[in-house]
Image (cartoon, rainbow, N blue to C red; front, side):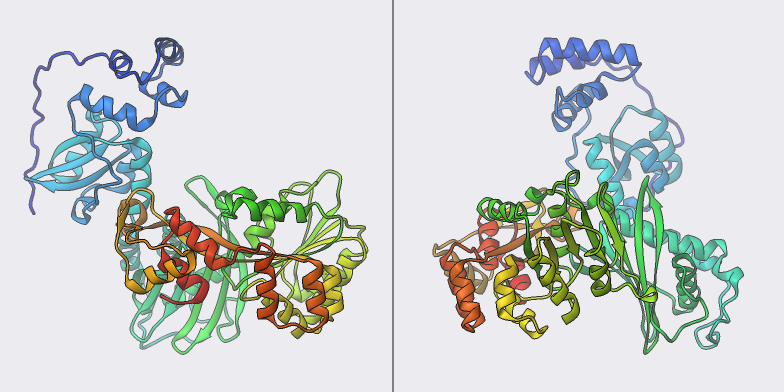
Length: 574
């Protein structure tokens, strides 16, 4: 739809707006004393009263905006309930949106509806008019919501397309031979900008991984968000060699080697945050695939109470962590959050009075007062050799990133039996299956029963977006699965309807589902007598273990996640 250019700015005389402070007092949102304190602070610091009121915690941002909407006589737009229209987003540049904290919402009757933190900012309105060519209809929104909407909705597709057009690359039919990509292309401004924009958008979109995958006719780019891969944008296949080479240079890889798998690391700064990135490449049928793992330390959970464990299980697990010696294992597939649980566990331990040493691949988060060792296969430092070296460093507590081979498992068991508290992760479908996994690695059942204190098994499930959560019906098989596990009928369940803040997925963030098996005398006897995994699991349930399925369904009951998420992630059923 074409808009009408705003060639002149209209002005009209309006009656004086009511006083903000008086309106807040009348609505009983603040006390006279709070208003007086805020006014004094605002005057002393030369700041707006509204900003001081929110910063001091005297009034909630959403309550203040509702009052400002009345005071300024402009509509209040709740961005949690409105979808930004793509045609509107294209009209205002990202730098303008960030500079003035505003976001275009929609085009209505030849006017551009703009949600603003300050609808009275004439300079911002004039800037939007100049860029868009539309008259502006200002509305007010919650400042924090506007910032988040900018991060989620302003994607860099257009900028990337512009940079690609500036590239002078060989065609896909005349693909260069190994090592033939010119450095002036790889280190030139356009390809540098393309890589930066891809990573920057991934960080803003809460992605944990970036997949760059050459296909027959295109270069596929996908982001993993909350454990699920989403297509970001297709790129022309011609850009593939230069893009991969640029990433290799950043990650310290061999730019000339294209057949053998490589891995490396790099750091990246986005929006004032420093993140570490692990890069891995491997040859596929259509060329080298690249996966970038984003390690955003600002999003790392280092508090056990935030992981999602049930209160009783959390209390039992925290008691295990106080043990002077023994082995605690965290089990689950790749991506189940095992490292997060181990790091949160480390944060519970006495770092001042104990010598805590870790062997990890890689070190994803650096702790103060903990000695962390990085696996380095080229230098001969593996989990097994690193663990043996740690044993000579007078440790009290040892963390082993993963028990993946017989040597590591055997050494870890021995360390637990000789007066050390050992924490480690291991691949296993559930808590009871860990004993079978250790047996397959050659660990004697007697040593298991003597060393193991407990096993945590876990999965990650997506949380329902709190901004668009609603009640509704679900497929019959999911409802029956809930009723069978919980023993109660239920017709409606919470789900996410989809909104700006969850990119229309209905989910925002993830939480864990857990089961905790604590070693008991009965389970020790069953291990020694060769009991099956099923028998051990049933005994653990008798002793109070809440299974992952039940833990997940309890979170469904509380409206945290959905039955489909629990069934898919615990049993791979949808």
